[in-house]
Image (cartoon, rainbow, N blue to C red; front, side, top):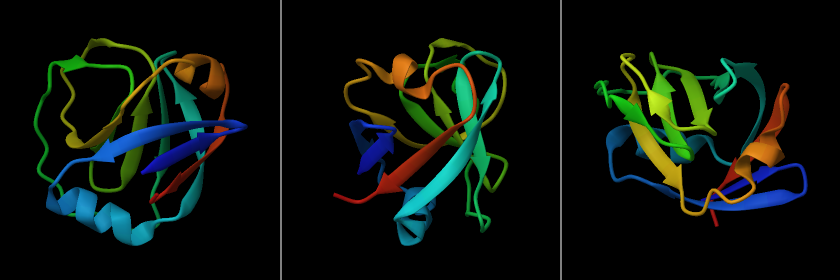
Length: 113
């Protein structure tokens, strides 16, 4: 998968699970992602996905997860978390990710390669 933020693109891997399969059916999609907590961007998807939430404990920059059943979250910093998410995938190389997403809200395009 390719994730584009402004002029910067990132290669990402989607995991082999039903949630990722449902997400693939929505692609390509451009979302207006909202800044939250200085470590993530999130956006509500147009449809609910089947999910299997778990508590990962440690979030890593580049993780792509679903909160609830329809909120896509892209993390750009690593931190500890007690929240439950369904793991969707991750960005392979996060170099420049934090700069690309910036400090505010941002348009992000997700598409299959």
